[in-house]
Image 1 (tube, rainbow, N blue to C red):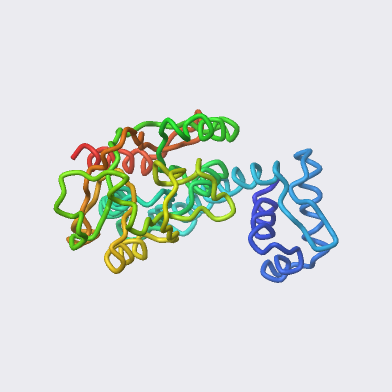
Image 2: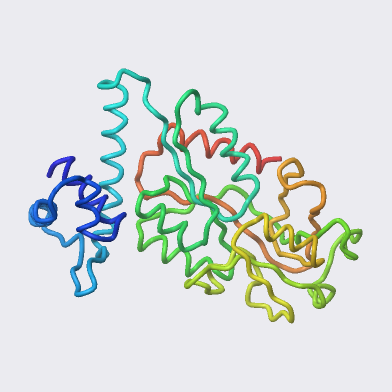
Length: 300
């Protein structure tokens, strides 16, 4: 196995085509095909499955590519530091549900460790993708929640991907609404009071199961439902349509403005919000720093 072979399979996985990958690598298609076959033979796995329509990544190939990306990334850091005589570009990626404290922690990380060069990523994305990102080593850390409804299912999925959940804090249910919403001055609200208002939630794509929902009480029947992909859109709709969403109650007015407020929801339930990592993995210096920053924000 060589570093070059690992770079080859990563390029093929990203382009989705042997021919396109060969063009971008400036090598012949037969040479690329042979290099991949030699690697598969040596590792005793099939990284790609070949069909009449092209290639697809196999399940064992997804795991292999996760490790391959990590090896190549570390090799790039070594080259940056010792061959090109610089201090090395910092790399870090986190995948998260839509939490303002996760963004705040990311900002602090860049301020402290970004320096002159860095390549950091934060992915506010769907729950299934968060799990997949960490399992395949695209992200070192994933931020999500568990509760009595989804815990058995999510923990089973985490275990099958060799991942572990680390709790940060437990939150009581709240709602986010516009400061101009008729409910805004109430000390707490009930489900019955919310019936006439549009309910906003983050859609989960093809994995749009109740268990993957970012909002607790996802299985409750509601008359008006709106699903969105990003936090800015959700907040704009909260304001424009007098809608609401169910949440942890944590909001950053500096980040999200003063037009959105949090109100306790008079309903039994907890959100155990935490982060997932690969089992037995040694967390990087940046990963440890990010987790410490998260703890600082949630402790407030």
